[in-house]
Amino acid sequence: MSKNVREVAVDVLMQIEKNQAYSNLLLNQTIKQSKLDRRDIGLLTELVYGTIQRRDTLDYFLHPFVKKGLHKLDAWVKVLLRISVYQLVYLDRIPDRAIVHEAVTIAKKRGHQGISGMVNGVLRSIQREGVPDIKDLKDPVKRIALETSHPEWLVKRWVDQFGEEDTRLMCEENLVSPAVTVRVNQTRATRAQVISMLQKEEVEAKEGDLSEDAIIIVSGQLFETNVFKEGYVTAQDESSMLVGRALGSVPGERVADVCAAPGGKTTHLAEQMNNEGTIYAFDLHEHKVKLIRGQANRLGLSIIEATAQDARKLQEEYESESFDRILVDAPCSGFGVIKRKPDIKWAKKEEDIAAIQKVQLAILDAIAPLLKKGGTLVYSTCTVDKDENEQTVDLFLSNQPTFKMDGQLKERLPLQVQQSKRFKEGMVTILPQDFKTDGFFISSMVKQ
Image 1 (cartoon, rainbow, N blue to C red):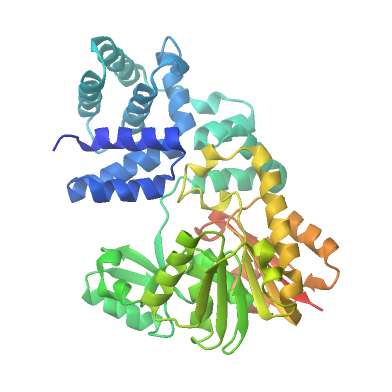
Image 2 (image 1 turned 90 degrees about the horizontal axis):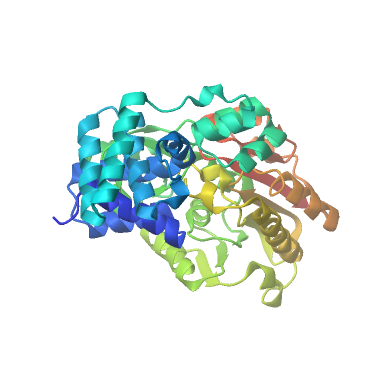
């Protein structure tokens, strides 16, 4: 094999930095293409995600030891040093000498004698002297940002919106590996039946903590099982499963899911409706619409009609009051899913939020006439930002006086969500630390 696991990790991280590629997609692709040993796949995943998650902290640790400054280094050298320091500081099962030796070997292979000497010198100095202590920083925003490796502007924004304690807890939770959770296809089996079926395929699973549809995978290769291939389960986070429950669709209705790809929530609605009625699933891009169709086929759901269509132009195709219920799971900054996609926190800028909010509002205003009187509109996002969430809802309600907050939402959500301090009439924000799930926002409105 021409490349070992650490070299592959350097390549993946370089591509993420250079092409703004999503880490999860690129990592899956790399695992399929590389001929890495199964044991090395775990280490590759750890190195890639860990290095992205801790990027600013690692740079802070490296800063005193790189005399010319990190910005002067070639990108691959900086990535190699980050990976190495990540292992030295955060992984205790790999001996320090092996980490340094491996880094120097890669530096020799990819660069010249001077670079490998510098890499060796930096890492041995860190080994000897230890890394600087972040706790010495007095400014709480700076300290949280560096300790948990989040952009300072984002930490400041969250402190303003949620306070220092909730921000710190959220940033810490974003560094924790997410659980693998799946939603049971209730048209095919119960949770207990699926847990038993998985056991026979050597996958240990237990009931979820938040959603009545959820199973948490404790160990085993879920995606290689017949249970998965034959459509008994779908991968979905527990807080995301609450969106379908919030809409409350029932068999026989006409429902629109206007930002539907890749189809997790669309298929959940179809399962709730017992595959009776019609769900019109729209997304902007045809290749994403294929993902919705693929999900529906695997799960044996026939009521989903998936079409490539801009949600802002649906009025040109459909008459007013065409749908009983509408779900807008809107494009957003994605700050609720940082633990799954750590590169999001580095890719987004503060000014992006206002631009995203404009799109969210345009979609909501465009689809408002398509909902029947008495119908339910759910607006959800996988972000925690108040401008994209509460403020977008407030602006929509001021533009659309026929809509009001849904007083019945509470009854459709689990008790622990109803009792959350972040629950208000018709809406709830779930922060990652609340239930150890993704961060999410769910609001429900009714047309009068």
